[in-house]
Image 1 (cartoon, rainbow, N blue to C red):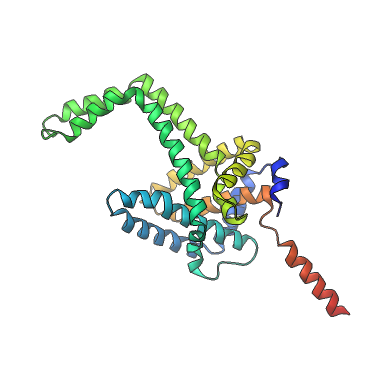
Image 2 (image 1 turned 120 degrees about the vertical axis):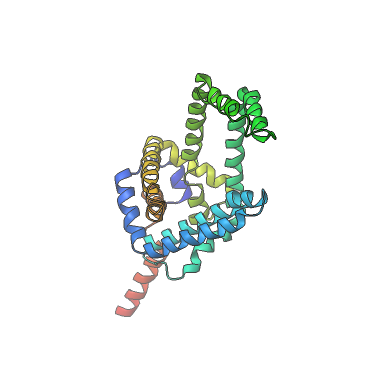
Length: 271
């Protein structure tokens, strides 16, 4: 595994095709665990989401990111040949609660500010639509509400603003695509992990853009048959993203210290 110092000046890139292939090879070995883990995550998230307001915040900033950290951990272990022997390992991401929460919160705040900045120019139209939807005679004014909504979404300035916002959010996602990987695998704090992710993403920007667009299309298509396909494509995305990270960092290679110990023991046995 490359050191952080090596990665700071490293310009290694990854292959999308190799990431997709290796990603599937990794997760297919324990696909049943991944599917069960996804179902458990949805059930837990649904239960927490029932709590008004707080539940949604807990899901987006704590629960989902920590479960993703757990998925990164087990995927890393599988790639190194250790396997997924204990189903409870999917919850090991909570060991990294503080840096995972902080990194997710930072990204959430920046994304929220960008959305506010874009939608600020259409604040009066959005408020009008909200007032119409909350009014007591909403059912009588359905046509008025529909026209107000159509006027907003067909506004060329609004469409351009949405495209700019989408590009900006995709850019942020690309820059910090590997922040959780650095937190879990390199045991880093939130901001240093985000900075290292940015360094790698800078040299793999177009590969990551292509990767996310391709995986996004695959996930959308897989969700069409009642969402059943997501049981397979979401683990595939986890494995493929990890594979892209491993191609750059070599984190899937055996620990050097273990190899040296093995060689030492073998020499001693020969003697």
